[in-house]
Length: 219
Image 1 (tube, helix red, strand yellow):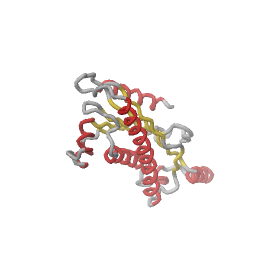
Image 2 (image 1 turned 90 degrees about the vertical axis):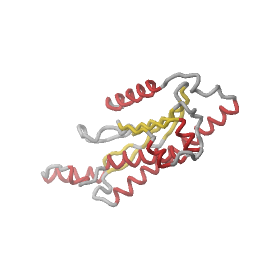
Image 3 (image 1 turned 120 degrees about the vertical axis):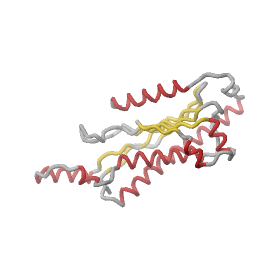
């Protein structure tokens, strides 16, 4: 894990802990065994929904790049993983990992060809006006937000708690060019108040208004 990623996750941890405000009135009563099992089942189901959302975001990236001058210039490596945890006096946190983006063999061959002919490297040659990493960040973010809004359960989040999704790009097998500005893992932090989650599920809050209440941060 590179230094930037460590700093980003340290910031996320500080934000999560700083937002936690212990309150006997806000925190739900200790769950009975049956309720705990149901909450764990909902967490497991939401983990699967988040993993599917990440795959969908990756597919959207591929579709958009195939229609641009950046087609075949990047590839994704790694798996989609999601793990949910209940944090007392805070809510439920989902740690999501999504495939990393790296330069493809096509890009590498073009770089070698430029080097052999003495042509200077130009960033515009690989992406033109298209910015693959910006597209990827956007697609992953929107796919995860859609998963939060469309999941039918509340995953055991109380009204005064938070549903948090902390997603980061995998740092496994990332082979970017040393010193390249793109060699920074994408990190996305999404949060939604438990009361808003409940209102959305009960249909007293529209999906459009709920979307506005999802807090989004990028690192």
